[in-house]
Structures are given as C-alpha cells and as structure tokens.
Length: 285
Length: 322
Image (cartoon, rainbow over all chains, first blue to last red; front, side, top):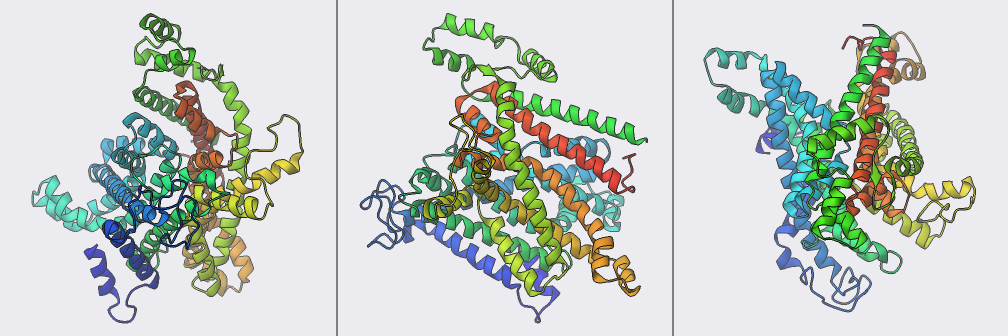
C-alpha cells in the first residue's frame, strides 16, 4: 500500500492531489473499518439481543433502523455484521492472492513444463462455475467462517495466477534479473528481493476488487443459509428476513445498503488506484 | 493446421476438460461428510447395519472410489447420469426438464447485458471523460457493486409488492395449464433484469476500455486524416477491433452466469438448473448434484469452444496452429 501511495504522489506532486473516486472510496472504507473495529462501542445493542418489540419500523424510538421478527435491533446487526464481511473479504482475498502469486510466480519464473502444467490446471479451474464449486467445498468442510474463507480463496486464485505469471514472465528476461542470475543468487532470493516487489503493482488494484468479490460471495452464501448461522452477517440478515419482504421491508433493505456501500468503496478504490498507476489503463474489471 | 482439424482438436480438448471436471467433482462430493447410504436409508425409515450394507451393494457404493468414478464417466459418456433416489427419477430427465427455464433466464440475461453493455460501452468509450461517460460510469458502478440477490429482493419489493406490476415468483405455468407466452415473459422480467444488471456492468467496462484503447491506435489517426467520417471510423475500424476481447470475456463469464442464477432462481422460485443444484446440495442428492455440475460445465466449455472457433474465423491472425 505504501508503495502504491508513494508512486501516486511521486507521479504528479501538486497538480492532481488524489483522484476524487479514490478519496471517496478510501474514506468510505475507512469508516467501515472503524465501525467494524469499534462495533461494541458504537452499537446500541448486541446483535442477538432482543431489545424491543418485534417489527418496529425505522425511525422508532431507540431503534433507528427498526427491529426484526424477534425484536432485535437492525442497526446493531448491521454494525456487527461489518466485522464478518470485512474479515471474510480481506482474509479470503489475501489467501487467494497468496495462492495465485505462488502458482503464477512459479509458472512464470520457471517456464517450460512447470508453466504448462500449472497453467493447464489454472485454466481447468476457470472453466468450472466458481460459486457452485465453493458451495461444494463448503459442504465438504462444514459451515464455519474459516471454511468460507478457504472455499472462496480456493476458487478465486486462478485470475491472480494468470496475472502474476504474465508479470514474472516479462520480468524474467529483464537485465537486472539476468545480472542477479549471473551473480549466482538463489532462485528464492531473486524472486523475493527482485521480482516480487516489481510484480506487486498490478496486484494492488486487483486486491481491492478481490476483497469486494469475496464479500459478495460470502453474503450470497450466508443469504442461501449455507454459511455460519452463529455469526451475524449482512447476508444472513437478508436471508432470514427474506420472507418478511412484504411486512417488514427494512429488515432486508438496510443490510443490503451496507453491503452495497462496502462493495462500492472497494470498487472505487480499485478503479482509482488502477487509473493513478497508469493513466492510460482504464480499469481492471 | 487445417481448420476442420483445429475444430476437432478443440472439441477433443473440451471433452477431456469435461471428464476432468466430472472426476474432480465426483471425488469432492464423496468427501462431503454423511454417508449417502444412510441418507437413503433414512428416507425409508430403517437404518440397521445389514440394511445399509444392502443399500451400498445395490447402488455400488461399496466398490472402490475409482471404480465408481470409472463407471460414472462411462455412463455419462452415454448420457446416463444415474438415478436420483430422493426424487425417484433419472437425473438426465430431471435436468432436461429444468434446462429450458435456466436457458431462458441466462440466455436472455446474457443477450440483454451484452447488447446494453456493449452499446453503453461504445457510447461512453467514444466520448471518454465527457459528461455522458461520467454519468454512465457512475450508474454502472452502482450495478457492479450491488449483490444480485439483494437487487432481486428490491425489485420484488418495488415492482410486485408496491406497484403490483409484475409477478414475484414462478413461471405462471405451475398449475399445469398454459396461460400463454405473455404470462411467461412477465414472470421472466424480474429475474432476467436482476441477473443482467451485474453483467451489463462487466461488459460495459470491458467494452469501454477496449474502445478507448483502439481509439488511441495509429490506424484510427490515419483513418481520420484521410477524411473518413466519425461514424465510418467507428463502424469499420474501431468496433471490429474493440469487440473481440468483449466476446472472449463474454464466453468466459458464461459459467458465472449459471452460478449467479442459483441465488436468483431461488429468490424468484424459478424452476431452473441453478435452484436444482442448490436443492440437490441441501438434500445430499449426489447424483443430481454431479449431473448439475456436468451440465453447467458442459455449457461453459461449449461456449468457450464456440468463442474460440468464432475467434479463428473472425481474426485470421489467431493462428489455427495455436
């Protein structure tokens, strides 16, 4: 992150301070992280606490966003739900990026048969409908936060691997890498100190999108009732109040707004970083 | 390499990929905790050990996993996908029955999002950084950031609960009699729009980027300096070059369209393959789940093959000798 920021500022020092999209995205995300971290301090009630009459509409006394079937406060659920969304999103994206970087890096660095095997496997995984595969993996591992993280990571790494392979492939033939090879540095040292820092640029704007995608996947899993029912999350809130759409719309509308704002923030950040790193490259979607 | 040989090779590769997909999923599904035999026995209300053994033997569940896999693959090659015990029917029959609904849903969503996405993409891309471009960008970003299942619920809330314009669930054909195509289309509206919104965003962004990068190329400058009209440049030089990457991406995205339809089919009670897969997973109906996997993977692979062949036809530089 500091690497990208320093590049952003070095490029155009005074004339264009920060891309407005990037600024809005970062501000929104910062707010969300703050809410997630300080959830117990901000939330008026616990996420599972029955704190009032059921079906209170929004703007009721003591319940800004109303209450659900059991009289639980919707706002408190949303505040605590931010934790799961961000945790799963960030953890799954990080894990997926690590897997993808290792596999793509190996393929790009060594080339030849290693490249062929790894890339065929990557392409093969890409032909499978990822979400369905994630559901089956989840059924194998049982529903818990960490199996959701793992399932999302395992289906999301192929695009990262392809990107990293391309980066490593183009870096491998550069003079400074050749020089390091001639100097007799080990593969590990070359990759770690010379190649990885140079390949990490494009990953950063993708990373934000991967977090967004992971958050969406997690919420869909929880919405379908296949997630961890013991952890409050936005998807779970929408899923359980789906049947109440006609009588208590607020129970499914507001968690969705939170989800929307989170994904929007991450997309704005990805877009902003992508544009600032390379003026001509428009978007990585 | 000859074109026909290229096509045959490509189909052969597709079949190999499909077999691998089935094998992987077969093994994965067997890892799901819970003995299929006891699920079957549970249905009939008896669960003593001899009865379980009998069931295992009857359905071949006592054989080694690889033998079971081989049998399954050989059967699948002949379009026999096994039997769904919970539903007491052949898997292939159930899937064939459910496939038209999914094809109608994903097919129309695909076409609509491609047409709208590419249209908007060309429009915005040819005026990049103007007010039109900025406006479309913001709207599309909102589409991109909204979870599909939630869009579905909101559309139901607005168009069926509040406005009462469109039906919220099913196809209108559940009762058995035929209420006509118009009713079917009305039922199709909300699910298709829900599914299409996200892909409008994807294709829009792809197409816009593609148009912008083509507009920066030298041959466009040459065309302009030779006095061609803007329309002619767009139609003859920019579009043919900008549209190719969109099509490749479209083929790659087809699989996620089927994935995306799972939640949407569930919300709208749409009787398609996506919801079938979800039901199969919940019921531990392994044969049915595998069948759904095979069907979706086959659709994706087939679309990729078609895209590859079209690519080779449209762009002769993409050598058939790849």
